[in-house]
Image (cartoon, rainbow, N blue to C red; front, side, top):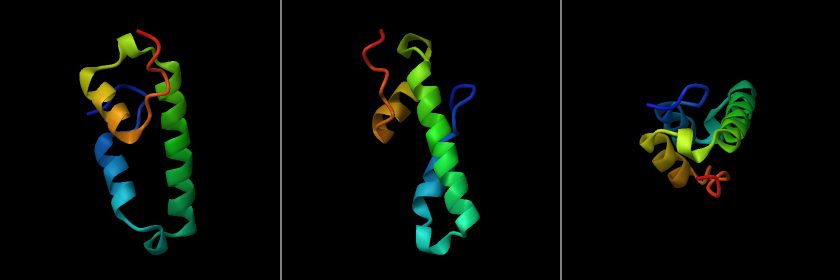
Length: 70
């Protein structure tokens, strides 16, 4: 489960598991756009407003660019 406006963890895992060589150009473009939008959402959402699961997910995926906001 993820916070509103964020990419679902199962989608992230599914995107990461399938090799790019097996994806169409459209799928690769969608992955890039979804990842960029999720990173922006992570950066603008204050850490104190994130759920525990979202904080853990951001830490695991390296999407914790907002860690200095308590």
